[in-house]
Length: 454
Image (cartoon, rainbow, N blue to C red; front, side, top):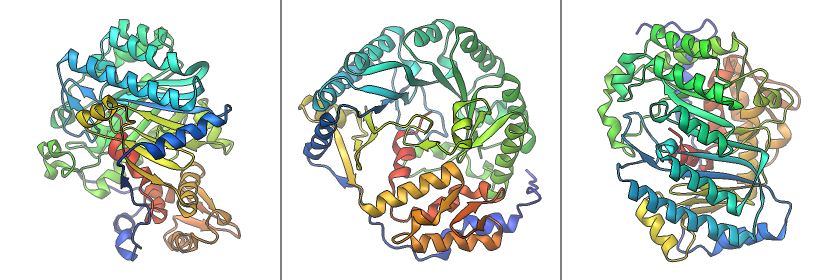
């Protein structure tokens, strides 16, 4: 496609920022995820939670199964049509939940619950009901718990949505990706606009508090005109939240992505133009731009939290109600307990074998040091507030702060006496700006490599 950059973003600037990592000699990472031989340290961290009865939890539950594989997918997924295999996964998941619950000493309040995958709504009604019963028996799901589930609209029915609502889910996100048939054929995911519209209105009528869509830019065959048509159709439906992710190609990790013709992918400039269209479309129609690539209605709690400076971000996503601890269940799930970061085994067989031996299925871990914590806090503050106070960087992050200040000459940041602020132009490059604090710290990457939703 022929791309015209926004008037305040030149093609030269896009190229320069996209190559910024080559300008710096990055030190070797001090954040080394270590393979775990046993679960002793994880159990000790959980037992520490047991001491403080006021600790609140966020739960992430990973359901890896899909009926087929979308060609763009970078998630930890398994294609199966064997219901018994899914039942076996739930058997193991129940034992993992019980082990963790026993370690923390019984029920705890859950402020955030997120079920993702894979395709969680690939489970049948009995399996979905069983899943809810598992965590409700062991944790306190409150009326105000932010309980969310991700769904494939092609697998959704009115009856299923009614069940999910009855099970306590108040927020649902549908994987829309793109509504142009040519793009859908190129990525192996066919779902008509009529189907998406019907599913959306069913969820509205059933009474979900929040309905979200996931979109992807940078897909093969996308043009400015076709993507604008998708944006217009989404705006007509007016979901409460829209996540607009960039397609991430990782054929070494996801070889099925080779089926997407690399020559049909937009260039970096074209990707930037597509995202600019999304920003312009949503912010011009009553949505706030949240963090990196999420848009929410101005009345949504995320928009209000960002405006009031109390927006938070964890491995589940953005939240206005952060928990003290994050626990992940299922294959590849990540968690963090008082600075101890863990990730479960990604392979189903390895994960199941560990649980069968009575061992928590942690495969990798990392204990955050003081610099890691500072860097994590700096990244989160920069993403959620589009600014970085100098006091957050003072000392161990001085070099990164100076590098960020160097973007002032490109008009991406403004420097004041006590902080850096991201400019409206710099907002489009916020992910790149964050990588100046990412040389040592791979925790945020783990969220996408192993726990991304579909």
